[in-house]
Length: 93
Image (tube, rainbow, N blue to C red; front, side, top):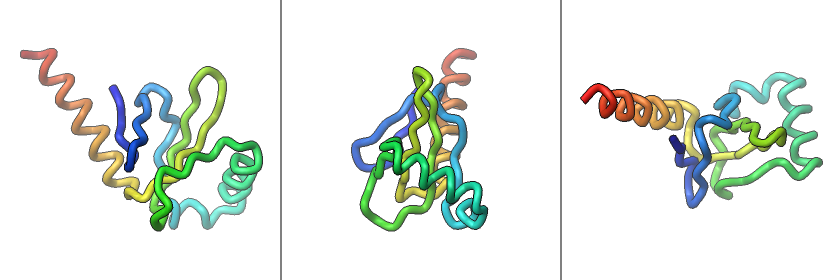
């Protein structure tokens, strides 16, 4: 299954480690350090140049990528949850 992060960016849900709210999570120095290091390493993808509301950490083929999205973490979680429910429902029917 895939998750649309905004604009033209879609990722595999299997690669998602976590979906985080930018305002709540960047209070921690460790999180800020992680994001800074990811950006220095070239592992950050800005999905949109609008005001960022969330970041998504993914790991695929051993590489960690951080996606910065203008969509809220709640919206992304809801999209993921609804997509999973549709798949489960189709398997039942």
